[in-house]
Amino acid sequence: MTMNKQTVWLVTMLTLMVVLSAYYIVTGPVEPVEQAGQPSKENEVQVDLKTEEADSKDDIRNAGSDYFVGYQLQRNNLRSKMTEEYMNILTNPKSSKEELEEAQRKIDQLMKVDKTESVLEELIRNEGFRDAVVISGDKHVDVIVQSEKLTNSQVVKLISLVKKHMDVPATQVSVAYRP
Image (tube, rainbow, N blue to C red):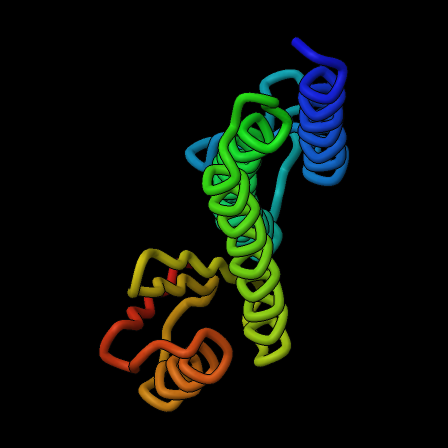
């Protein structure tokens, strides 16, 4: 490995460690949803029905949030690997001029898509959804929002946001929700 490859690899791994550490610090230990609202055996406590339902709903919301954070982390991890591959081409002295240009173009494209997806996810959250994930393919975009239900007007609004920011036809956008 050359010094540049080692540096890129080290920075990638450190970034991944920081993201994962922040995720675990923010979310804390996660209980399975089946155990939500059930008191532990050592702390036998009487819990009234309203509190138990609230605890259960909070745990379901956390499980939903974990789904979205996990999806975003998985997407970022995949993009990091792709970027690393392109960086290997850029740092390889044997790469041709065409390979260098193609690798740089791919990195720029990945960064543009990543930024657009992040902006869209933030705009969707600003529309009142707890969380969202935007997954763009070659010519298709999937949007998954954290919500109990979706109205037709919300779907139309989401599709128009994607259409405006990602320049894809409405027929190439799918919208789903997850509690």
